[in-house]
Length: 334
Image 1 (cartoon, rainbow, N blue to C red):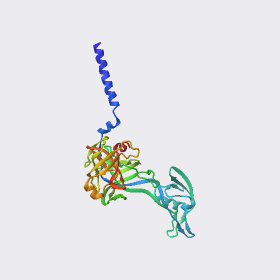
Image 2: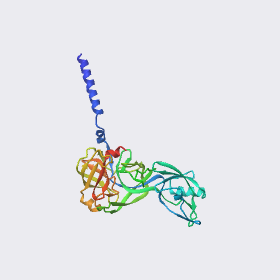
Image 3: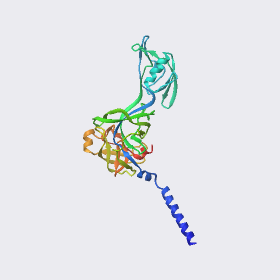
Image 4: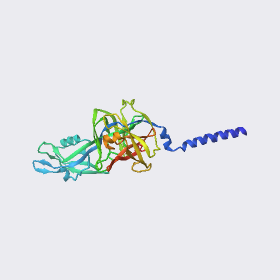
């Protein structure tokens, strides 16, 4: 009987231990994870999966001024995805399709918001160049500078902390993209009522990563397999941010990040817009260099008590020393 009691006691102890493990908060596991700390600038070139109309213009032809895009009912913000049955991804694709159709009226497929629309358009020959045109100004990619927040050990990276937005104010749907090493060469200081900006140059034309996702919490993708991680610092993830002193890693000159002091003024873990922190720059050197938070610093990692807790996302236009940050859990989850 005593042996049976001992076995039952042992089994109950094991079950209690298993239950205790299963009932651990999800964040507890995240606390033990490590990533490589970012803070370095990166140049982004993101494909948008088509040719977006950013302007509609008239075309001077032998028969006078014509506007085929307006006649076809096209609008700024539309994305041309096919012309004459030819898939369109770049402005060069439009030129090739127009050359192929020889000026004949052609079917056109566009994306307008969440809709796919079919149009018929009649290209006209431009008097100056002798080429057929639709009367549109096109962009087929977006470029900019941001900051890498972290790199996981499997070489997946997260950056920016917020979405790249489309012309209509929504989250831009990207169709792949390349990330390049970048060097910051100039800073436009932030002032009350006007956001500042980091200005940088791509160091070379060799990409360091490929982007495959743009969402509410940033741009994500994979670093190249030969990317050198040796100079980066491993850091644990944290979910217990509190008001008080913290630091931010950012690059405002050259290509190497520096650590600057900030203060976390407010913590709101449940904010649905990913504005989980209100932060204030207190570092005199950073204030002297930039005036506070500027465009291009988005994604700069926020560290408190030796753990990565989030990333800088936005600046207060009326006070460039203050801004928002998103919790790292929002980015790791993507």
